[in-house]
Length: 111
Image 1 (cartoon, rainbow, N blue to C red):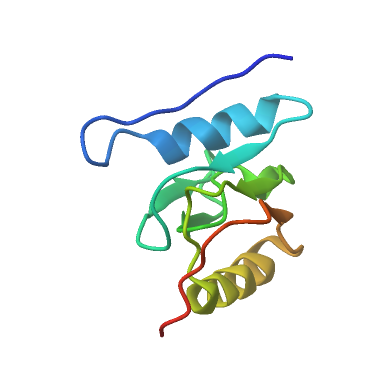
Image 2: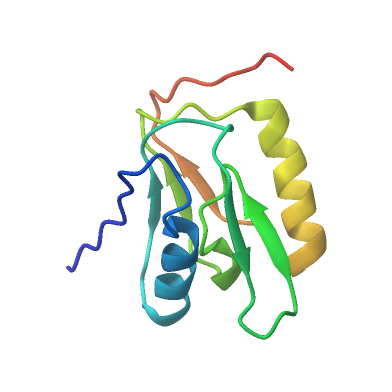
């Protein structure tokens, strides 16, 4: 099994979302693992042909290619915002994203 890690060190805007999306579009049996932060993140990804644009906050960039997202126990999803993001994603792409979570993940529930 091959592992590819996409890591930023410049506090954002390094192209992590774009990179993950492009990798997801071409890899088989991929899995996006969210391991740090929470709903405050934002990874804007645009279709190369300009057909769509989506800001991934908690759903992994690459989910638009049916790649599942796993919330590691070090990630803190915001359940209120996640519901809104899933709705927007589903309306844009026509399918619900595949989301998994480790059993001991902590969640944010304050709106």
